Image (cartoon, rainbow, N blue to C red; front, side):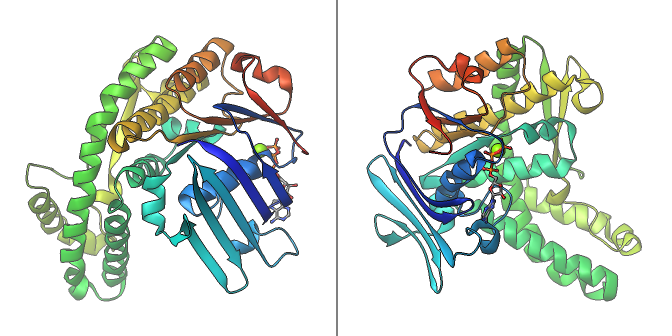
Length: 346
Ligand SMILES: Nc1ncnc2c1ncn2[C@@H]1O[C@H](COP(=O)(O)OP(=O)(O)OP(=O)(O)O)[C@@H](O)[C@H]1O
Ligand SMILES: [Mg+2]
């Protein structure tokens, strides 16, 4: 997708922001607190219908205003988000569009300094990564995930208060868990070889990824989950929560045969995390036949210049539209002379 124009009213620090004539490469320059991240967040809203850090209307609305409005023209089509007073709408060319459909219609992928935690952080961060990437490819995924998480919560509550009824949630847990895992397997099968190749290309090193489940998974995913719940039944009662299942899935990451989180350098882990993101970008483009828009919020800052250029060139040469932030114009030397410069405050 290609964002041509953006209009923002009463969102975050903006009273009104109107920007036209975006190019493929857009560099947003301004001091700390100038509103650069807020602008990226405005673009992100027109894909995910939520902010980077929050979905809370109060936080997103300009202090003192009643609500906000964001409008973007993407490849000639207009997406509008209104949240003022009782008026709450999300539309594509003036027709309401559901959030799950919007995500796959207008996929947006963000790169931020916090991405390093994909390599170094808790497994939950990696699950969030593949969950949000799959949600861009498959508009049914989130529904299964939400139903799975609901069943899990109810089952865990039962295990705490009323263990003999915990089995009531097993069917929902198994059927939705199987869907979630099936879609994750499909995604990681494509992701892993891409990331391993990308890491080689970007860091000239050897990375290995391995998706794993904390129970024995065989061909029949539903049956595997059923067996896992049966086998862990007494353990679950003792521990008072569901020990096995999709909520414990993870990807193990290795750099030069060592566990990334324990032995990788900051730059290696950051590059591996970006390779995962770029892998997701490629899968989204191949599956949807549309290019996701790329938002890079200060993310390239901490990489050495060769890696920074390689990552940027990779994205640019794929023809993706990029919006990236920085505090000084000279930081963007790697972006070339054709980049569109937006200076805040505008
Ligand atoms: N709802 C809101 N109403 C008014 N101002 C807000 C709101 N939410 C955030 N802000 C303000 O926006 C500013 C932060 O903007 P933003 O995060 O976009 O800065 P930035 O240009 O990305 O800075 P940095 O270079 O430090 O990342 C802060 O001053 C904050 O107080
Ligand atoms: Mg910022």
